[in-house]
Amino acid sequence: MNARSTNRPFWAVGAVFGLLVTLLICGPTGGVAQAAVAAPAGDALSVGDPDALGQIDLYVDPMCPYSGKFVRAHGDEIAKRVEAGTLRVNLRFVDFLDKYSASGTYDSRAIYAAYVVADQSRSSDVAWRFIEAIYASDVQPKEGGTTDLSNDQLADVANRVGAPQLAQDLIRIGLPIGFDPHVVAANNLVVLHQFPEPGVPLVVINDRPVDEDSDWLAQLPS
Image 1: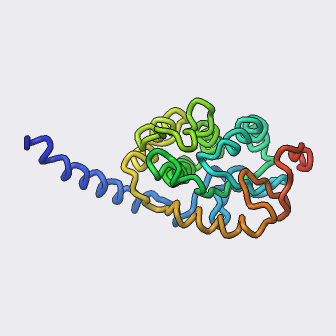
Image 2: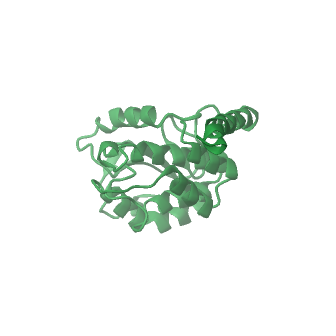
Image 3: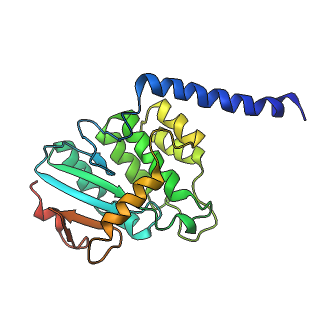
């Protein structure tokens, strides 16, 4: 065993300790993810103005191909409305497909990464760009596939959308510091099962599910 391999565990412990000290000084914000002026709503990761006239709850699974199709189809318009202050999106992640990912943990790691990006950036723009990025057709892992994104790759995605260095470091280390994705997913799953068809993606407006393939954006103030 050489000196490098011997010292590696001590380096890892030191890195985690350093991040913990930093978090004690500057965040996270009490276990809830924030983006810009958006305030969190329970187990939701919220982007957009909390006073926006248009408000939706959006249930998605990070590896679900239909969730990916939904985000790719509506992502640009959602981004425009969030930027204009007319839409607030409460993302409610579930982890149906965690066990079907190559690592067996992709959903939970992606959920954690999204929360960290939102919390550390405090930017609805950055938070939503990260969501769009992990659902991009050339990035989102395939259900039952042989590979998915490592922590390093998720951190690289965070870097590309402009997330702060601390967010990237937290994602790379992979410890659920500040947010527990399993609890988030479990709590959202309980609420999801209160609807007649508890699948994802699911758009909920005024506590009522709508057909995500319909022109549901037309129901909201623009």
